[in-house]
Length: 130
Image (spheres, rainbow, N blue to C red):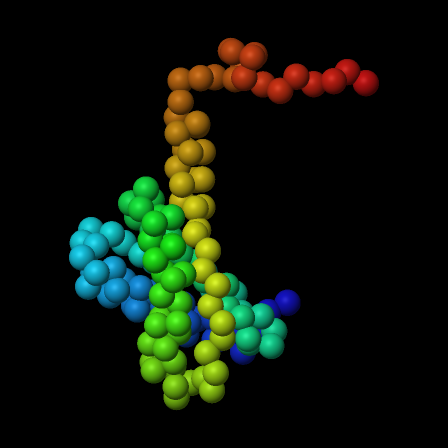
């Protein structure tokens, strides 16, 4: 169960990290790349923050995530500058790629697809008879 303090800190981190990462992408010559922070989870002791990042277009996702991970100390420093009046210590940042949008897109494609599993029985898993 997440406490109010965890939620508040996660909200602050999410907003500031989104601004920091988007500015870094724009300044780094990555025009047209959209980086958003979809979710931040903070541990109960506030020492670790799991940051889920959504990147569009998604084909640049892993490349950008590697860049973000390698620049984690710099990102943490910029975050500390922004949050120094709200937080004493910035938690350790662990970045993950949030691919839920790709997952949703795949589901939508499947739903719109021409392949109807009821007409083409090979698409359905075979059930074992009891």
